[in-house]
Amino acid sequence: MGFLSSLLLSASLTFGSPVNHPLTLAGNFGEPRPNHFHAGIDVRTEHVEGKPIFSIADGYVSRITVGLHGFGNALYVTHPNGYTSVYCHLKRFIPQIAAITRKWQYANETWEADVRLKPTDFPVTKGQLIAVSGNTGASLAPHLHLELHETKSGSFADPLMFLSPLVKDTTPPVGHSIKVYPMSGEGVFNGSAGTQVLSLSSLPSRRNTAWGKIGFAIWANDYMEDSFGRLGVYRTTLMVDGREVFCSTVDSIHPRYNRNVNSWGDYWHFLMTKVWFMKSFAEPGNALPLLKTDADRGIITISEERPYDIRYILSDRFGNSREYSFTVHGERQDIRKAPLMLAPGERKFAYDRHNMIKSADIIIDIPRGLLPGDVVVKPVVRQHTTAKSKAYSFYPASYPLFNWADISMKPNGSVADASKLYIECDGAFPRFCGNEQADGWVKGRMRELGATYYIAYDDTPPRISAYNDGSRYVRIAMSDDKSGVKTWRAYVDDEFVLFEKLDKTSTVQCDIRELPVARTGSVHKLSFILIDNCGNESEYVGEISL
Image (cartoon, rainbow, N blue to C red; front, side):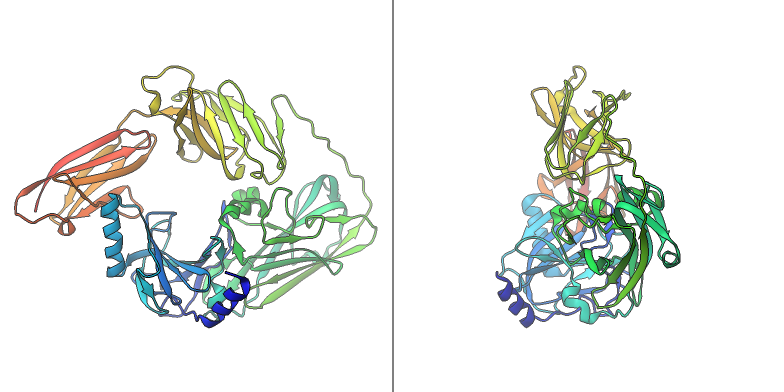
């Protein structure tokens, strides 16, 4: 669809609130978070579940998901103007949509669902009830997470593009501090080549000096009436002597750039302080389209002995803005060049090329475009008491990649069953990274240079414990300490029955009253099969009376 056609359709299509109470937000679009942007808005549901949720515009239900992407129960409504609205963390769907979902789950013999519908299957109108709100999936409190996708490209867009008339906001963003980044070997600020944090309130009264190449970052938040959260800033502009050198406008983000947030924001500062300083310059490997810079990528060159006027302009989507100005005095200073000297075992990964480490027992293959800048890595080999290989890490701290890279490892000895080998990532929690087998190698995926990787072995079946809650439910508690639970299936008299996962637990349950089994008053055989990521199976066999 062309831009003009989309614009005309957008103008003719009207949008309404997804809730029937005042529309207030707990989170806004594009708010920076570790490894991802907040891809929608968090609509308050008055701190409770069970609030009615309505389609925000005419369209059709195009997709229904259960248990995917941390969304819990989610609905997608495609609109005729080129956008799709997505309603997440729902407690339940309306009965007609629930019936479609249940039919798909039984046909595919799985609880996790990804149902795709045609335009004629389930049309909806603006304001039509489609679900009730909940707290399912990766949700910490009851709310509606509402996303807006460009239907064709899949890019995330700000729902307030259409819903802003329904939201009250007269409060401008607030800047708290700036962080200064003298470029290594190319700049100094206040006599130091190190980074510095300075309060915005004190900057106008300070005398700051600099020479060479300097980058700035700002810690700022937006605020909104009836919202108690700290929101992300919609637009940040950095001016130097009246010339724009940097501007970020957070209105559209393609999923492939999600992890670039770690480069735009100061990821390591956030890990230490939980504060995001967002850089007003672009690292050389950061191709995030919402960042617009001058030819120097937003880095300021202080090369004259004179005052430089620096001005930040912070704006929200509602036209509220706030400015901060300060002066940096160009003052000629010596800049110590620091040529890169690699220590034994170190090597440089370049952001603009394909990088690989290959030895007799490990290969990491990082395609071009996954690094924010050049980085010095050093493979560190450790012994792991239970591993079937050496344990490797490549960076002394967390260093996330922009996307998945490949890692292959060789076991250090023979095992009873090579198919039970898998790569494990030992970070905050051990994580299954893959178990593809090829020519004696075990292959997986990695997105973190600072984690430790090794081959683990899992020939232990997962554990099952079953119990009844009165006469209505059969519940199964599942656990696996190694490669992790992959899937489960259940049968009554060899006919598939659905066990649904209880949210935020490792327990699944079946409502006996909803089983598609004839009520004969007799005893039926229940078989529950649990499978882990290495193909190990456990089976529980019991009886239920129907």
